[in-house]
Picture 1 (cartoon, rainbow, N blue to C red):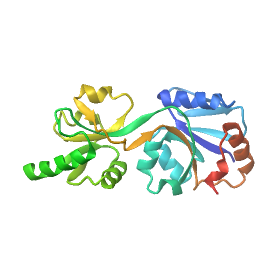
Picture 2 (picture 1 turned 120 degrees about the vertical axis):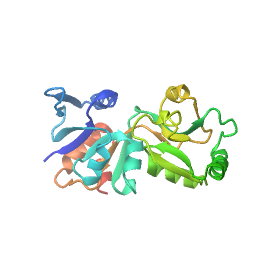
Picture 3 (picture 1 turned 135 degrees about the vertical axis):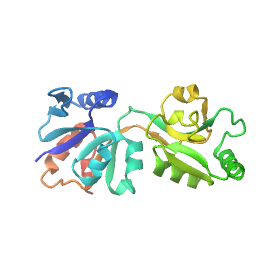
Picture 4 (picture 1 turned 90 degrees about the horizontal axis):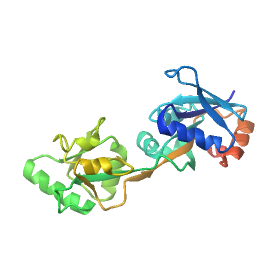
Length: 236
């Protein structure tokens, strides 16, 4: 048996994750052809590399099919209800930073805060007969956030493409999306509300509480010591 470590299968998240482990004396690498998601681990015994999309990793952790996984905090908290009961958050990794924000058209000069958005939503419904639409991929996080801040008279519409373009395309009046620099928002004539973000996300190492850790305690202690984390938090 071995500890299965799920890592993003491509792009900067994969490269940065490989670098993070390398700095701690553990080498992760892709093997095989470009389209083959196979990998290898050097520098420690009893650890198996599993290459997945970042979006798959929360589900695989929750199901216990992998023991450890690297993915964004935004994906874990959006995908997993009562996420802390399903995974242990072991270590923020210092890369993949992005904020989940609410943005509205720059032309809405009287809307700068969530209180303003609430008033605008009520006025919008009174004028148009339907609720103001907010396009997002993050329904759970955004709904909880808006409820906590007293925003009503809105509806969330699903966006699986370029969320920033939904306002221009007239399929939404506002958006809630991940941004790192804000450049795409500005290019689409959108502005971020002044309130705190819905979530400040970054790449994080998580452990699965549902995984079978029996017989892996020694490997977990060795790996945890190398990484500076307590893997036993997963089954504590």
